[in-house]
Length: 291
Image (cartoon, rainbow, N blue to C red; front, side, top):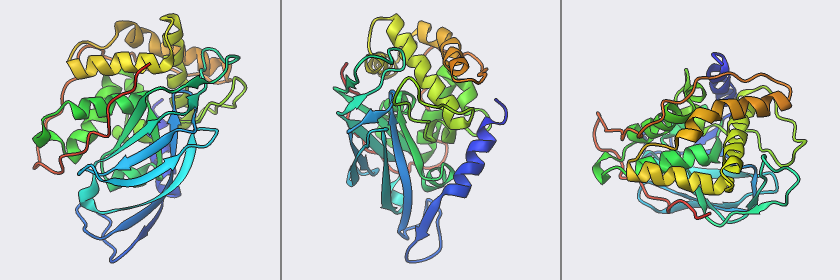
């Protein structure tokens, strides 16, 4: 797993397609518009025909797209530094359940979300952005902060904290970008899932689906359960923490590769606090969905 994050970041940097308008400063502090070309990947399993809205830190809508059959959708988005963090909310559609591969797609009756802390992070993942249970929990944590604590820094730390309590091996040597980078979309039981950072991410999502199945709930309902615990400041579900690695590893084995990793710390998610300025206030991007 030590090579996971470095591969992800190198791939992201090589595949990023960014065009800079009105100047060449691409920093998060720049007022010059930057157009980024990328893809969203919404996944519980693959979430198809979902309506995805991207809002900036002020809560203004920057982009609206609908995911394709594999849960992905290409996008072009123009941003300036003050737009960040961006909140992505994907509502409706239907998704594949890795724990029950012969079942029909499950209707998504709620919303899953993601957060893009800054332009540098967007570029580091090649513009290929995940909207998953993990990123949704990061948004829940970020939204629980006081308005003055909602900054680029705490957006990054919210992603890293979800990794720490649930899947620390996903955020080794790369931090927030590893949860934000898109997973391989799993659309059917025979979907090829490679032994790559995106495939490993997909295995963790399949692990969540298996845990949900053990609880006799849907993957979406498990996400809602975990989001409620993040929002209420209570300990994250212990079964999810203790079983996630084993479930993800079993899925990976079925796809022909070995997955190893550390068990999450569990407990109560620590609310990040900014150490540098106040930054943007960040939009809420809606609330987590029902089951």
